[in-house]
Image 1 (cartoon, rainbow, N blue to C red):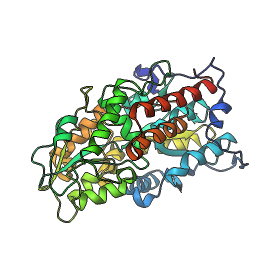
Image 2: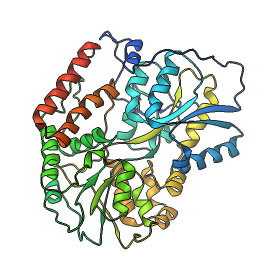
Image 3: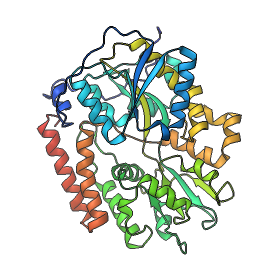
Image 4: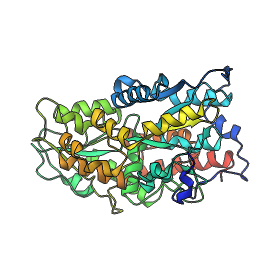
Length: 426
């Protein structure tokens, strides 16, 4: 491929490499808390096979599995899939790459890991044609771009979708205030995933309130007015009984099962719950409603940009085959196929106009998915795991233990600021 994505000019972003703050690649890598383990490099193997690290089991990623089968059939290249549990994937990759090992050729995972991986020199820039990159929304591409180079290609979306039970809610709430005023007998009015997704939910609410996690100088800003609005909203939901007791332990699976069982009137769902509900007993199109997320005080209905993408290891010794795999798996046809097979929102906007997509899903759900794709927000930042852990500890303390919201946010801010000072970012 002789036409690179950087030629479009779209790929330029403010985010670049730290060159003068004293942060070396080993410093960023060390934040993951991994110890070095020796792995052998493989320089004598032909490019008729690649090793792909998938975030989780393919049993729960049927769209990815189907596209891998298509790739193998069309190219003759075998894909050795290592199904790595989500919670272990970043640690596994960090351990491998700290040893400059070529075990992994391609991996998929979230865009918000990129900052640490790119700054450590562990990923290969993607030599994708202009037309391949241009089919994705600009804001999504910018999250995957550093110093004018694209390091990840979007595969599918997993951002939040607002769903409601039309048997008990005649019109979905338009604003946070409407959510607080919603009254539904025998159901909790508002559900969202908290366990393992608490910082995701905080970010989404933060964006709706008009805030950001960091400013242009990498200074934490989540503790300001927007952050306080988020925590006041969460406290109000709890105090008014709009969320059930034990909400802090609600995982994706718990939330989905509870919604399908009729325990929630409305939910902010992260997985393809809408597609599942259409085929679930006692649900279907007559009962399932979907809408744009309730607007926050910042005037935004943004969802958190939780998008899985594919990247190539800088240590891969089979980069041409790996590049073919990335381009195939993130093509328009593969992104659409994933949506039709699994129900994940497609990351290519014009796919939502295709007749077979409209045959598969009701128009209101497609409109919601496309709106969320084009209005999702996200940030990549250094030491993401540590930052999120500090924030998670504090915001969950508010939800579970009645900690003062402002004190919790300020503590998280102080912890993150100290971390960034320690590693030379501030």
